[in-house]
Image (cartoon, rainbow, N blue to C red; front, top):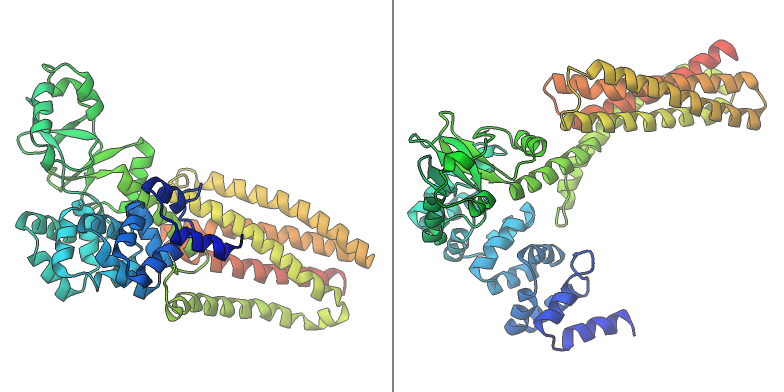
Length: 473
């Protein structure tokens, strides 16, 4: 049976909810490619009931993934078929570009209801993507308490703990017992955060003094004072950068942490599910920055991609032109010994690869706080020694290959020494460039690669041509 026949059968036969769930996702939990045409077919036929069945079998995160595979017109048609409660969860999972596009087509009243079903941090992220006029309409349609929470969150700087936190927390006074707390949780169930792991113990000034994990509450006797079972807390200042927050969560293995104002008053909490997103976002930024590009996304425009990549290519062209001046300065020597024209790009490329290895390790170490002033000299020396060892090994191999082809031991020696010298430069620049840029307050992932590429090309050409000029010619 052909792929087209399979897809047609999937679209036409009736399935139970369990069947659809099995069809929707592959074994790796990615969206089944055959499921997308089923949704498109239902949209084309205007079959609202079929759409409800197909969407009902998907988790909101999978619906967000589905949106990325649909055209803009299909997305616009699909949105009205989502219940406001589901719509809010889907919006929080969407890529920014797709979310901004979808928000243009969601009525303000519907969006206001969807935001009301979301945690304050997720709702603030969505509102932040709205145009000013629509933002005002949506906020005006929301209850005063929910509107105030979103406006307060948006008042904090982007990518800080204040923007990352959810304002909904569970707090209890120091004098409460386990019984008081459990009774409160049961009584106020509908008003509690959808997800929480700790009950924060606060003093009369509403400053957190400890935290009681829910698991401890359930195991303790009702008459036990909270002060006896509460644990120490790691407070997160409201203006702390989200990358710093992620580092603290990773270092101390936190599940949640209280967020406090400058005076120490509890204003919110950050949970581990928020941190997972931050870690993924920061990691993607560093990986893309190393290559001098930005996240294109599935719906990125051609002009936007060009604008993000072309400037770095222009800078790279300028640095390569400078490196090429070395070749121009030795053109007479190259004319006398054409083998140099074959070997010098190999020497340069080997050094570039070695520099990229060192640079990648250094940037990761800086990002994970494994490299700082306390151990920088030891790491620099280590990387230089590794570079020299690898340079000696690769220089010997390339020198041997050179002798096999040209039967000239002097040329082999020139190549071997040039590789060793370039590996030294690669290791030195690969570790030092990100350290220096980080000390200067610059992002080491953004421009280090340009520096390392330039240095290994420049010194690779200079080493082989300069040594050849001294020994061979």
